[in-house]
Amino acid sequence: MKIKSLTKIFLFVAVAALFSCSSSDSGDGGDGGSNGPNSISVNASSLFVDFGQSVTFEVTTNEGDNVTSQSTIRVNGTPITGNVYTAANSGSYTITAIYGDLTSQPVTVQVLAVIDAVSITANQSTLNLGSRIKYTVTATDTQGNDTDITSASNIYINDTQSVTGGAYIPDAVGTVSAYATFDTFTTEPVMVTVEDNAGTPATYNRRALIEDYTGDWCGYCTRVAVAIEMVEEASDDVVIVATHVFNGDPYENQYGLQMADNAGVTGLPTAIVNRQEDWVFPETNNVAQVTSKAQGTMTSGISITSASKGSSLSFMVNVGFGETMNGSKLVIFLLENGLVLNQANYYPEYYGGQNPVPNFVHNHVLRHSFTNVLGDAIPASESVANNTYRTKINYNVPAGSVGNPNNLEIVAMLVASDNSIININKAAINTEVVFD
Image (cartoon, rainbow, N blue to C red):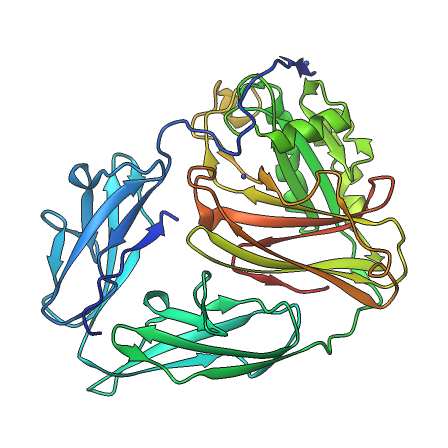
């Protein structure tokens, strides 16, 4: 049924506790929505301090409100009084905050002896284009102890400060030079040679796509949510894009509305497989319709490499062609997982029959499109056999447009000229998903 319409460093580092009914016009077309704070983060005035120095903590919501005075701050699990702490011993201290029923992700503060030297290393001296370099900055104290201070250091790539911290994705062959600064220390540079020696595979694992048009207001949409859970249990090779639309859903945005318009979606729930066919009702009885399309191999595939720090995101999408595919296009989406919002539910057999389902976790929510939602054309000179087409994107996530930047994922799909899916892949933030 459908419903229509080491020396003291004062570095302010935030670690986030860091995607039938009748449709109607709604929303402002933005990328974000708000239903009150759904996460908090605890921030430390210093992540690395000399022994005897104090650290000040601040607690903020994902909406940017300072709630320090209303929060309980814990150091190694023990509540402290106020928001200033001085460690009794050197070592590692884990900081969390509690505000109402929200608990932050932990922050680690290192209390160190006096630093004697700082150095930078790379995870490899030579790598192929399409991979990422991971840097580690190490402080050595006067007692000979080494501490990883990468997150508190400034790393410079070819003399330009990195916005993604200890990870960097080269977009050209050559030599990458990097050095780091920490307090008064500057490291010697480390060199990495970038080559383009990676061969293009002849075949790639075949994956499938479900585009789930849904809404928090749609009581019949829980049926599709359950079916998606069944698919995810049955296969790791199905990619989900949850497109929230209509009737004031807080996660609605311009990209989802464009997709719904192009697909002719006027009622929810609607789920479309590989952009070509409706997922047959009842979807819970037709899991094989989807999983059967995520078996075997294809002659083209996708890999994704990403790096991020705070709201700064950098990633590269690589499309490998085992055969020439004229007219192919590339679609790249940014999704978010772990969004908590009550969900209407008209089914007594799902989610305990609750209506609404409280604190329902919405995953794979479409937040942004880096391309036209139907895809950007890949140049004919690039979509040829035995070639790898690459595109690198740098993006600063707008404040308030997502709930938690650490829960983002990238989806890239190769589509044919008729908009059917050739192949697809996904990658969580700060991971490298290789050709397979």
